[in-house]
Length: 229
Length: 229
DNA sequence: TCTTGTCGGATTGTTCAACAATCCGCTACC
DNA sequence: GGTAGCGGATTGTTGAACAATCCGACAAGA
Image (tube, rainbow over all chains, first blue to last red; front, side):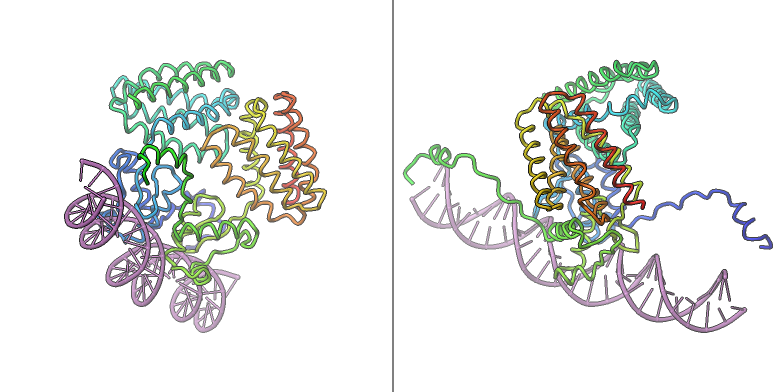
């Protein structure tokens, strides 16, 4: 390497961050999180230490550590001497989630309306959902819907709120797992996301805030109606 | 027992919940949390598995589980293969906390102003702080101040927000540990909590919201001035 | 038939010892 | 001054063992 050190540095440009290494316990927690999110571990199901350890070919102690990592996420419930269970979200849990959503989703609406890039991203997400609905891919509709609402919250630029909302979204997914029919839930709300982004693009923050609140109230009612039937 | 079973049940009335038992890992996490909160484990300090295990006379595996329990609390930072360290909160962390506080503390002000019990509780907390300040007990002032702001947030009746705010308060306490002089920080803000509760009691929610925002902006500036000096 | 007591099996909670893996500081060499 | 190698400290993981707890099944007694 005959070049001077300064030249070597310049040639490399901005290097990407190294992928984050994870401990085995973190990896196990990730697997379990994913299994829960995809409905392969259903609400009420027990996460058996020995079984998971054998299946994933890790030590039981490692599985226990991963359970502790999941403890805060409201996805599992840890009962002393009984074990760890996938959490069941009932009507009260749903009410709590929507109360929180109504409090925090509107927080950054003014910033959203003033930021071209955010408006564009939200518009794209609604378009994605509409296309997915046309194709009958209701899981993708749900994903785009979640991304839309996540973007409303991350627009507030608060690590605390964003982190909390990630937990709430995971919890909400738990509630959705109980639904026999995703289409019945999502379809009526596509139009409303479109209305919402249109109001925001027009700068009508107050109307958008009202629309978002109405949306969340209606979504809660629709979900409760199914869950309590 | 000659009574009929129904009568036996009626006599017992509403039984209180049993005290929650804790696993050893949870207890260890609680001890560490408390040590951090009281400044006995300072920011940057490493939590050594072997040492804690020996001191608390538990197994190293149990200590590791407790570390995982602390992982979400933003009090410690877990670095793969390096260990677990009490988190250091710098100026950016302080800005993030106050941004979040400005977003969420005002959320339930209308409900606060409409609820006599909440107003009374807040007034009592300000009175407690004032008395503690007269007695020069600045730690108690800080505690009452924190309780005051916690009450603003719990008034929103959101388990998610309340839980998140507990984490934020613990994190804030970490930042306060760097302060040489608690009095200098708290004293100017006693008067402002009093102004705030008076506005709320008078039902002037808009003025209270403005006062709270000003308060938080000023508190952030005061803290940053000290931390960046 | 209902209630209470006992027992056994399954699972969790904890401990311990061992080893692998990683990091970091120190020293030697160029 | 920079690099390579080594050793020690610590973390990460494993697996076995045992204690503790829970729960279901069964038996006995009222």
